[in-house]
View 1 (cartoon, rainbow, N blue to C red):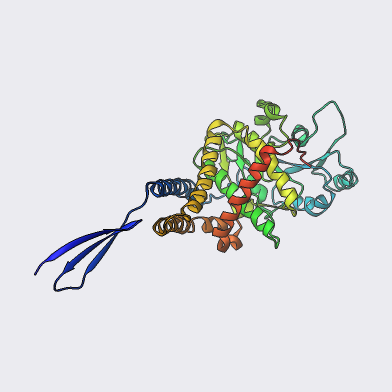
View 2: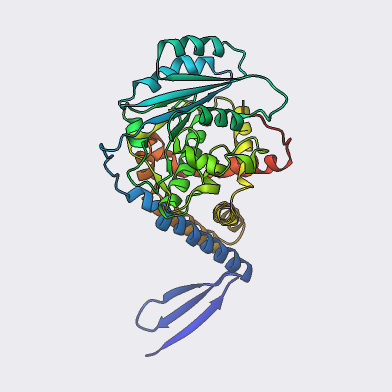
Length: 405
Protein backbone atom coordinates (compact mmCIF):
# COMPACT_ATOMS: atom_id res chain seq x y z
CA UNK A 1 0.00 0.00 0.00
CA UNK A 2 1.24 3.49 -0.81
CA UNK A 3 0.27 7.04 -1.51
CA UNK A 4 0.99 9.37 -4.36
CA UNK A 5 0.61 13.10 -5.02
CA UNK A 6 -0.87 14.87 -8.00
CA UNK A 7 -0.72 18.68 -8.50
CA UNK A 8 -3.23 19.94 -11.05
CA UNK A 9 -3.11 23.54 -12.33
CA UNK A 10 -6.10 25.72 -13.26
CA UNK A 11 -6.19 29.37 -14.38
CA UNK A 12 -6.33 30.91 -10.88
CA UNK A 13 -5.59 28.04 -8.50
CA UNK A 14 -3.90 24.70 -8.18
CA UNK A 15 -5.30 21.62 -6.48
CA UNK A 16 -2.96 19.35 -4.57
CA UNK A 17 -4.48 15.86 -4.52
CA UNK A 18 -3.23 13.21 -2.09
CA UNK A 19 -4.42 9.67 -2.78
CA UNK A 20 -4.06 6.65 -0.57
CA UNK A 21 -5.20 3.16 -1.41
CA UNK A 22 -7.05 2.76 1.92
CA UNK A 23 -8.63 6.19 2.30
CA UNK A 24 -10.66 8.56 0.16
CA UNK A 25 -8.66 11.22 -1.69
CA UNK A 26 -7.81 14.40 0.24
CA UNK A 27 -7.73 17.73 -1.63
CA UNK A 28 -5.91 20.93 -0.68
CA UNK A 29 -6.62 24.09 -2.67
CA UNK A 30 -3.76 26.54 -3.16
CA UNK A 31 -4.95 29.88 -4.53
CA UNK A 32 -2.67 31.38 -7.15
CA UNK A 33 -3.41 35.02 -7.98
CA UNK A 34 -2.17 36.85 -11.01
CA UNK A 35 0.53 39.54 -10.47
CA UNK A 36 -2.03 42.28 -11.18
CA UNK A 37 -4.44 40.88 -8.61
CA UNK A 38 -1.66 40.72 -6.03
CA UNK A 39 -0.80 44.38 -6.68
CA UNK A 40 -4.44 45.50 -6.38
CA UNK A 41 -5.01 43.55 -3.18
CA UNK A 42 -1.73 44.77 -1.70
CA UNK A 43 -2.74 48.41 -2.26
CA UNK A 44 -6.18 47.65 -0.80
CA UNK A 45 -4.57 46.10 2.29
CA UNK A 46 -2.23 49.11 2.66
CA UNK A 47 -5.21 51.48 2.51
CA UNK A 48 -6.86 49.41 5.23
CA UNK A 49 -3.81 49.82 7.46
CA UNK A 50 -3.87 53.61 6.99
CA UNK A 51 -7.60 53.67 7.73
CA UNK A 52 -6.99 51.71 10.91
CA UNK A 53 -4.24 54.11 11.96
CA UNK A 54 -6.67 57.04 11.90
CA UNK A 55 -9.40 54.98 13.58
CA UNK A 56 -7.36 53.25 16.30
CA UNK A 57 -4.59 55.76 17.04
CA UNK A 58 -6.33 59.09 16.41
CA UNK A 59 -10.12 58.87 16.63
CA UNK A 60 -10.30 56.20 19.36
CA UNK A 61 -8.55 58.66 21.69
CA UNK A 62 -11.56 60.98 21.41
CA UNK A 63 -13.98 58.10 22.02
CA UNK A 64 -12.23 57.17 25.27
CA UNK A 65 -11.19 60.57 26.63
CA UNK A 66 -12.71 61.40 30.00
CA UNK A 67 -14.70 64.60 30.35
CA UNK A 68 -13.16 66.90 32.93
CA UNK A 69 -15.27 68.69 35.49
CA UNK A 70 -15.76 72.38 34.73
CA UNK A 71 -14.04 74.51 37.39
CA UNK A 72 -16.44 76.75 39.30
CA UNK A 73 -13.79 79.08 40.64
CA UNK A 74 -12.80 80.93 37.47
CA UNK A 75 -15.94 82.39 35.92
CA UNK A 76 -14.18 85.32 34.27
CA UNK A 77 -16.35 87.69 32.20
CA UNK A 78 -17.19 86.60 28.65
CA UNK A 79 -18.11 88.41 25.44
CA UNK A 80 -20.26 86.33 23.06
CA UNK A 81 -19.85 87.38 19.42
CA UNK A 82 -22.66 86.80 16.89
CA UNK A 83 -22.59 88.04 13.27
CA UNK A 84 -25.79 88.29 11.26
CA UNK A 85 -26.62 89.21 7.68
CA UNK A 86 -30.33 89.07 6.83
CA UNK A 87 -30.97 86.62 9.69
CA UNK A 88 -34.17 88.10 11.10
CA UNK A 89 -35.93 84.72 11.37
CA UNK A 90 -33.04 83.04 13.15
CA UNK A 91 -32.37 86.02 15.41
CA UNK A 92 -35.98 86.09 16.59
CA UNK A 93 -35.84 82.36 17.29
CA UNK A 94 -32.39 81.84 18.74
CA UNK A 95 -30.96 85.12 20.06
CA UNK A 96 -33.11 85.00 23.24
CA UNK A 97 -31.63 81.57 24.08
CA UNK A 98 -28.19 83.15 24.43
CA UNK A 99 -29.49 85.29 27.30
CA UNK A 100 -30.60 82.35 29.45
CA UNK A 101 -27.09 81.22 30.38
CA UNK A 102 -26.30 80.37 33.99
CA UNK A 103 -23.17 82.49 34.08
CA UNK A 104 -22.45 85.49 36.31
CA UNK A 105 -21.02 88.07 33.90
CA UNK A 106 -21.30 88.06 30.12
CA UNK A 107 -22.39 90.23 27.22
CA UNK A 108 -23.75 89.37 23.78
CA UNK A 109 -22.32 91.45 20.92
CA UNK A 110 -24.45 91.17 17.76
CA UNK A 111 -23.00 92.51 14.51
CA UNK A 112 -25.58 93.53 11.91
CA UNK A 113 -23.72 93.22 8.61
CA UNK A 114 -25.63 95.39 6.10
CA UNK A 115 -28.99 93.60 6.53
CA UNK A 116 -32.16 94.80 4.81
CA UNK A 117 -34.70 92.22 6.00
CA UNK A 118 -35.79 93.86 9.25
CA UNK A 119 -32.78 92.75 11.28
CA UNK A 120 -31.88 96.35 12.15
CA UNK A 121 -35.28 97.19 13.66
CA UNK A 122 -35.40 93.93 15.61
CA UNK A 123 -31.93 94.38 17.08
CA UNK A 124 -32.56 98.00 18.07
CA UNK A 125 -35.63 96.96 20.05
CA UNK A 126 -33.86 93.91 21.49
CA UNK A 127 -30.89 95.98 22.67
CA UNK A 128 -33.16 98.35 24.57
CA UNK A 129 -34.74 95.46 26.48
CA UNK A 130 -31.49 93.76 27.53
CA UNK A 131 -28.65 95.58 29.26
CA UNK A 132 -26.04 92.95 28.37
CA UNK A 133 -26.72 93.12 24.60
CA UNK A 134 -24.61 95.36 22.39
CA UNK A 135 -25.42 95.87 18.68
CA UNK A 136 -22.77 96.83 16.15
CA UNK A 137 -24.05 98.11 12.81
CA UNK A 138 -22.04 97.87 9.58
CA UNK A 139 -23.04 100.12 6.71
CA UNK A 140 -22.33 99.70 3.00
CA UNK A 141 -18.99 101.26 2.24
CA UNK A 142 -16.65 100.79 -0.69
CA UNK A 143 -13.59 101.58 1.43
CA UNK A 144 -13.37 98.20 3.16
CA UNK A 145 -13.59 94.57 2.15
CA UNK A 146 -17.07 93.41 3.12
CA UNK A 147 -17.59 89.92 4.46
CA UNK A 148 -17.88 87.90 7.61
CA UNK A 149 -14.27 88.46 8.64
CA UNK A 150 -14.82 92.20 8.73
CA UNK A 151 -18.04 91.66 10.72
CA UNK A 152 -16.26 89.41 13.23
CA UNK A 153 -13.45 91.96 13.57
CA UNK A 154 -15.92 94.74 14.31
CA UNK A 155 -17.62 92.56 16.92
CA UNK A 156 -14.31 91.75 18.59
CA UNK A 157 -13.31 95.41 18.67
CA UNK A 158 -16.60 96.25 20.38
CA UNK A 159 -16.27 93.42 22.93
CA UNK A 160 -15.78 94.52 26.53
CA UNK A 161 -14.01 91.39 27.78
CA UNK A 162 -10.86 89.50 26.75
CA UNK A 163 -12.39 86.00 26.57
CA UNK A 164 -14.50 85.69 23.41
CA UNK A 165 -17.01 82.93 22.69
CA UNK A 166 -18.14 82.86 19.05
CA UNK A 167 -21.32 81.43 17.59
CA UNK A 168 -23.74 82.11 14.71
CA UNK A 169 -27.19 83.63 14.43
CA UNK A 170 -28.76 80.26 13.59
CA UNK A 171 -27.35 78.52 16.67
CA UNK A 172 -28.72 77.67 20.10
CA UNK A 173 -26.86 76.24 23.13
CA UNK A 174 -27.66 72.72 24.26
CA UNK A 175 -28.05 73.89 27.85
CA UNK A 176 -27.89 76.89 30.14
CA UNK A 177 -24.38 75.78 31.16
CA UNK A 178 -22.84 76.34 27.71
CA UNK A 179 -20.79 79.37 28.77
CA UNK A 180 -19.76 77.60 31.95
CA UNK A 181 -18.15 74.91 29.79
CA UNK A 182 -16.68 77.34 27.25
CA UNK A 183 -15.25 79.77 29.81
CA UNK A 184 -11.57 80.62 29.95
CA UNK A 185 -9.64 77.72 31.52
CA UNK A 186 -7.74 78.27 34.75
CA UNK A 187 -4.47 77.72 32.89
CA UNK A 188 -3.65 81.15 31.47
CA UNK A 189 -1.55 79.52 28.74
CA UNK A 190 -4.76 78.28 27.11
CA UNK A 191 -5.78 80.84 24.52
CA UNK A 192 -8.14 78.77 22.34
CA UNK A 193 -10.99 76.41 23.21
CA UNK A 194 -12.53 74.29 20.45
CA UNK A 195 -16.16 73.32 20.93
CA UNK A 196 -18.58 71.13 19.00
CA UNK A 197 -21.71 72.10 17.08
CA UNK A 198 -24.06 69.38 15.78
CA UNK A 199 -26.79 70.11 13.26
CA UNK A 200 -30.48 69.84 14.06
CA UNK A 201 -32.10 66.64 12.78
CA UNK A 202 -34.52 66.77 9.83
CA UNK A 203 -36.08 63.88 7.93
CA UNK A 204 -34.17 63.81 4.64
CA UNK A 205 -31.17 62.14 3.02
CA UNK A 206 -29.46 65.53 2.68
CA UNK A 207 -29.82 66.15 6.41
CA UNK A 208 -28.39 62.74 7.29
CA UNK A 209 -25.45 63.35 4.95
CA UNK A 210 -24.79 66.83 6.35
CA UNK A 211 -24.85 65.59 9.93
CA UNK A 212 -22.62 62.62 9.10
CA UNK A 213 -20.09 64.84 7.33
CA UNK A 214 -20.15 67.30 10.24
CA UNK A 215 -19.58 64.39 12.61
CA UNK A 216 -16.46 63.20 10.79
CA UNK A 217 -15.12 66.75 10.51
CA UNK A 218 -15.57 67.20 14.26
CA UNK A 219 -14.03 63.80 15.08
CA UNK A 220 -10.99 64.75 13.01
CA UNK A 221 -10.28 68.22 14.38
CA UNK A 222 -11.10 67.32 17.99
CA UNK A 223 -9.01 64.12 17.86
CA UNK A 224 -5.97 65.80 16.35
CA UNK A 225 -6.26 68.59 18.93
CA UNK A 226 -6.11 65.90 21.63
CA UNK A 227 -2.95 64.58 19.97
CA UNK A 228 -1.40 68.04 20.16
CA UNK A 229 -1.99 68.98 16.54
CA UNK A 230 -4.98 71.37 16.42
CA UNK A 231 -5.67 72.46 12.86
CA UNK A 232 -9.19 73.93 12.76
CA UNK A 233 -12.33 74.85 14.65
CA UNK A 234 -15.88 75.85 13.76
CA UNK A 235 -17.18 79.37 14.24
CA UNK A 236 -20.50 78.05 15.52
CA UNK A 237 -18.85 77.13 18.81
CA UNK A 238 -15.32 78.16 19.72
CA UNK A 239 -13.54 80.59 22.01
CA UNK A 240 -10.29 82.50 22.15
CA UNK A 241 -8.66 85.55 23.69
CA UNK A 242 -9.20 88.99 22.25
CA UNK A 243 -5.54 89.72 22.97
CA UNK A 244 -4.52 86.70 20.83
CA UNK A 245 -6.62 88.03 17.96
CA UNK A 246 -5.04 91.48 17.89
CA UNK A 247 -1.54 90.26 18.71
CA UNK A 248 -1.65 88.30 15.44
CA UNK A 249 -3.35 91.09 13.44
CA UNK A 250 -6.67 89.29 13.21
CA UNK A 251 -7.51 87.91 9.78
CA UNK A 252 -4.97 90.04 7.89
CA UNK A 253 -3.07 87.03 6.52
CA UNK A 254 -6.14 85.59 4.77
CA UNK A 255 -8.57 88.49 4.49
CA UNK A 256 -8.83 87.84 0.72
CA UNK A 257 -10.46 84.42 1.34
CA UNK A 258 -14.27 84.63 1.86
CA UNK A 259 -14.29 81.88 4.50
CA UNK A 260 -11.79 80.94 7.18
CA UNK A 261 -12.77 83.27 10.01
CA UNK A 262 -12.76 80.15 12.19
CA UNK A 263 -10.59 77.35 10.74
CA UNK A 264 -7.84 79.49 9.20
CA UNK A 265 -7.49 81.51 12.40
CA UNK A 266 -7.14 78.32 14.45
CA UNK A 267 -4.82 76.76 11.87
CA UNK A 268 -2.47 79.71 12.08
CA UNK A 269 -2.40 80.25 15.85
CA UNK A 270 -3.36 77.05 17.68
CA UNK A 271 -0.74 74.66 19.05
CA UNK A 272 -0.49 71.84 21.57
CA UNK A 273 0.31 74.26 24.40
CA UNK A 274 -2.45 76.86 23.97
CA UNK A 275 -5.46 74.81 22.81
CA UNK A 276 -8.08 72.71 24.60
CA UNK A 277 -11.31 71.03 23.50
CA UNK A 278 -14.79 70.76 25.03
CA UNK A 279 -17.12 67.85 24.18
CA UNK A 280 -19.31 67.76 27.27
CA UNK A 281 -23.00 67.66 26.21
CA UNK A 282 -23.60 70.99 27.98
CA UNK A 283 -20.98 72.63 25.76
CA UNK A 284 -22.67 71.65 22.47
CA UNK A 285 -24.34 74.27 20.30
CA UNK A 286 -27.08 73.16 17.90
CA UNK A 287 -27.21 74.75 14.47
CA UNK A 288 -29.67 74.94 11.57
CA UNK A 289 -28.41 72.86 8.61
CA UNK A 290 -28.76 73.70 4.95
CA UNK A 291 -32.05 72.45 3.53
CA UNK A 292 -31.09 72.47 -0.13
CA UNK A 293 -28.36 70.66 -2.02
CA UNK A 294 -27.38 73.92 -3.68
CA UNK A 295 -26.86 75.67 -0.36
CA UNK A 296 -24.84 72.77 1.02
CA UNK A 297 -22.63 72.62 -2.08
CA UNK A 298 -21.99 76.35 -1.82
CA UNK A 299 -21.01 75.94 1.84
CA UNK A 300 -18.61 73.08 1.08
CA UNK A 301 -17.10 75.10 -1.75
CA UNK A 302 -16.23 77.88 0.71
CA UNK A 303 -14.61 75.37 3.05
CA UNK A 304 -12.65 73.82 0.19
CA UNK A 305 -11.15 77.21 -0.67
CA UNK A 306 -10.06 77.86 2.91
CA UNK A 307 -8.40 74.45 3.22
CA UNK A 308 -5.83 75.39 0.58
CA UNK A 309 -4.22 77.79 3.09
CA UNK A 310 -3.74 75.25 5.87
CA UNK A 311 -0.21 74.59 7.08
CA UNK A 312 1.61 72.01 4.91
CA UNK A 313 1.64 69.33 7.63
CA UNK A 314 -2.11 69.71 8.15
CA UNK A 315 -2.83 69.54 4.43
CA UNK A 316 -0.68 66.40 4.28
CA UNK A 317 -2.50 64.48 7.02
CA UNK A 318 -5.90 65.48 5.65
CA UNK A 319 -4.95 64.75 2.05
CA UNK A 320 -3.60 61.32 2.97
CA UNK A 321 -6.87 60.55 4.72
CA UNK A 322 -8.98 61.56 1.71
CA UNK A 323 -6.73 59.93 -0.90
CA UNK A 324 -6.55 56.65 1.01
CA UNK A 325 -10.32 56.59 1.37
CA UNK A 326 -10.68 57.15 -2.37
CA UNK A 327 -8.12 54.47 -3.22
CA UNK A 328 -9.70 51.99 -0.82
CA UNK A 329 -13.09 52.09 -2.53
CA UNK A 330 -11.60 52.47 -6.01
CA UNK A 331 -9.36 49.42 -5.68
CA UNK A 332 -12.08 47.41 -4.00
CA UNK A 333 -14.34 48.12 -6.98
CA UNK A 334 -11.52 47.16 -9.36
CA UNK A 335 -11.03 43.81 -7.60
CA UNK A 336 -14.66 42.93 -8.31
CA UNK A 337 -13.77 42.61 -12.01
CA UNK A 338 -11.14 39.92 -11.43
CA UNK A 339 -11.22 36.29 -10.35
CA UNK A 340 -13.52 34.93 -7.70
CA UNK A 341 -10.55 34.38 -5.39
CA UNK A 342 -9.51 38.06 -5.69
CA UNK A 343 -13.10 39.09 -4.99
CA UNK A 344 -13.21 36.99 -1.83
CA UNK A 345 -9.98 38.51 -0.51
CA UNK A 346 -11.20 42.05 -1.31
CA UNK A 347 -14.53 41.38 0.43
CA UNK A 348 -12.66 40.08 3.47
CA UNK A 349 -10.59 43.29 3.63
CA UNK A 350 -13.71 45.44 3.29
CA UNK A 351 -15.48 43.41 5.97
CA UNK A 352 -12.55 43.75 8.36
CA UNK A 353 -12.52 47.52 7.81
CA UNK A 354 -16.24 47.83 8.55
CA UNK A 355 -16.14 45.56 11.60
CA UNK A 356 -13.24 47.39 13.28
CA UNK A 357 -14.60 50.85 12.55
CA UNK A 358 -18.06 49.80 13.75
CA UNK A 359 -16.55 49.36 17.21
CA UNK A 360 -15.31 52.96 17.23
CA UNK A 361 -17.50 55.36 15.25
CA UNK A 362 -20.96 54.35 16.58
CA UNK A 363 -19.58 55.08 20.05
CA UNK A 364 -18.45 58.49 18.86
CA UNK A 365 -21.78 59.12 17.13
CA UNK A 366 -23.51 58.59 20.44
CA UNK A 367 -21.06 60.81 22.28
CA UNK A 368 -21.47 63.62 19.76
CA UNK A 369 -25.28 63.67 19.78
CA UNK A 370 -25.83 61.67 16.57
CA UNK A 371 -27.01 58.34 18.02
CA UNK A 372 -29.67 57.91 15.34
CA UNK A 373 -26.99 57.61 12.63
CA UNK A 374 -25.22 54.63 14.23
CA UNK A 375 -27.18 52.01 12.30
CA UNK A 376 -26.53 53.76 8.97
CA UNK A 377 -22.80 54.14 9.46
CA UNK A 378 -21.49 51.84 6.63
CA UNK A 379 -23.96 53.20 4.05
CA UNK A 380 -23.44 56.85 4.95
CA UNK A 381 -19.67 56.33 4.90
CA UNK A 382 -19.82 55.28 1.24
CA UNK A 383 -22.34 57.97 0.27
CA UNK A 384 -20.29 60.69 1.93
CA UNK A 385 -17.15 59.52 0.12
CA UNK A 386 -18.94 59.71 -3.24
CA UNK A 387 -20.42 63.11 -2.50
CA UNK A 388 -17.19 64.70 -1.29
CA UNK A 389 -15.29 63.31 -4.27
CA UNK A 390 -17.76 64.89 -6.71
CA UNK A 391 -17.91 68.11 -4.73
CA UNK A 392 -14.11 68.40 -4.68
CA UNK A 393 -14.03 67.96 -8.45
CA UNK A 394 -16.66 70.68 -9.01
CA UNK A 395 -14.94 73.01 -6.53
CA UNK A 396 -11.75 72.85 -8.60
CA UNK A 397 -13.44 73.95 -11.81
CA UNK A 398 -16.39 76.04 -10.63
CA UNK A 399 -16.66 79.80 -10.15
CA UNK A 400 -14.40 81.16 -7.45
CA UNK A 401 -16.41 84.09 -6.05
CA UNK A 402 -18.40 82.98 -2.99
CA UNK A 403 -20.09 85.30 -0.46
CA UNK A 404 -20.63 84.36 3.18
CA UNK A 405 -24.32 85.27 3.03
